[in-house]
Image 1 (tube, one colour):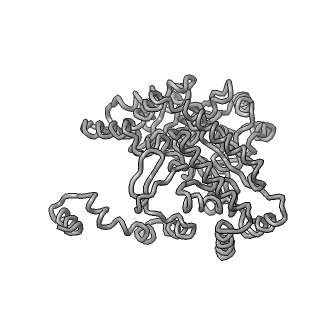
Image 2 (cartoon, one colour):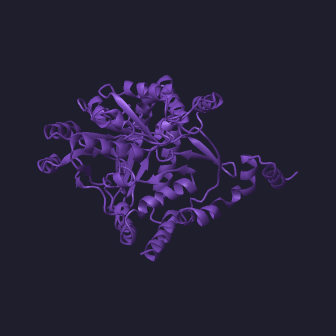
Length: 472
């Protein structure tokens, strides 16, 4: 019997056969996206040569349809903190499904949410309670709502170039106009420069600020808050009866070499903390808003307000099991220690290359969240090529590096933000020295090619220039 016949027979008998469906229709993936989903995604992937077909994945690697191994230095934008298909997380999900729990009855108190909250709060000793939702943007929405309610104030401050999500509330504190354009009116908000305490205090004096939300290390461009800023901002906020919200959706759960990125600065104790991404284990979406006891008690002040903030799928058993398994793996496999060790090795080896390559301006970051920034070269020949790219669109040189890393060296990375000459590395937290060697060798080969002023890298650059001009 053919695969198509098997799929047809399953349909006729009322059974669902996922394997047969994928075998029959999987090759239509790009056509299906073009027809039914975001039609610009396949167009973009075709344009930059990222239109691969990946068949399977494990750990920090995945394999394409031709059996070629690819190194993942993107981790699904940070979701795959423990890599793909970690056996402990897989087993936890099989176990919770096999248990046939009476999940989401809405009128009981199942143990898994309480157990996961207890585990999370053990890493957050100054916080007391947790609300579970389904994503990072939901975690931010919850924090914004809680802060505005308990302070009785409407306005939330955020930092320039910040990214906190794309739903309406989190979009209101998004520091990139390209995401905000066309979606007004949003919540009352004001942007302040990251690290500028004077600007923060000027806004706080107006008396209507509920909170400042801040990423300890910004995902867009990998910019870290200056030393001492978070502690001083916290003191200013509390003096003006406002709250500090730490967005740890990408930086949390070990990414920067501590459980949370704010923990790198002594004395910082945010009033609310948002986490998500890696807590999912890469399987079941989950977000969490952690906060102080008095905040939760004021929001949920009576039985009449028991559902004043809730989520239909929040605290579901599969997500809670995944989160518990993730935290168990982090402890048992000493993930945070590995991040410190491997992150320092990767960052230091890349930083050493700034002396060799004039277009490599800076390597920065903490742990396994690293930004590689490119800048204007000194030599006349390379300055001409650089000027050509910048005139067409800022960010094209970084794209010129990302593409050959994938096409020639089978390493997946990303440009850190629109109109930025920065590549961001956020690999799975489980990588080690072999993956560092592979990335640095490949990056060196691409930079050697780029600094020769010709070859395939600059041929692709001219293609990007033509496309950028055509899209204006």
